[in-house]
Length: 223
Image (cartoon, rainbow, N blue to C red; front, side, top):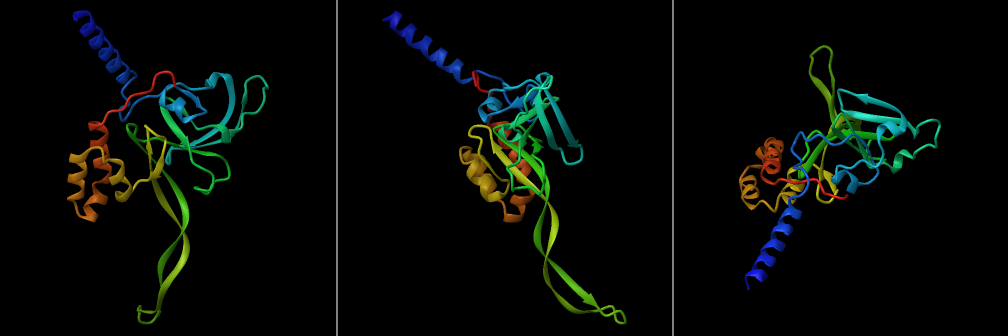
């Protein structure tokens, strides 16, 4: 009986250890540098290609944290590596994810740095999109508008996105989507729901920080 009980406890201990394997992905977690071909490689913090194995032409905008890869090939004159086959990469410990074609007005494949890492990761990128803007024509003598209206114009906006470390799903970072993503934390969700719509928007990022602190996630072994 004691042997059986010990076996059960030992199995449970092993199961528990398997569940907590890997490193905690904190908000400033440094990922291993290299190229990730798959989301699962990113989850495991295990790059598929090392930077020293390739020759790359890379341009990074420090203000937007966007990176454009112009060309990528195996070192010493090797074959080109299709950039659209890359899920993301990490440089200096900071991971960047590829923005799907058509979501951003860029000619070359573009990658956005994850500014926050955790169970819910966060990234942004500027883009130009058509928006209704209010315009007015003014009488030069009186300084008063004599004609007003709305027109469509291209305007720069900041696109905010979130990435689930568990599933790889990407969604717009807004209160409505965020509520469904934090449903597992009932106490935090209820507190968020008590806020007015404007308060939810104002406290959205702060609540995300709280959620990631309360809901730790770890890298996956053997990804």
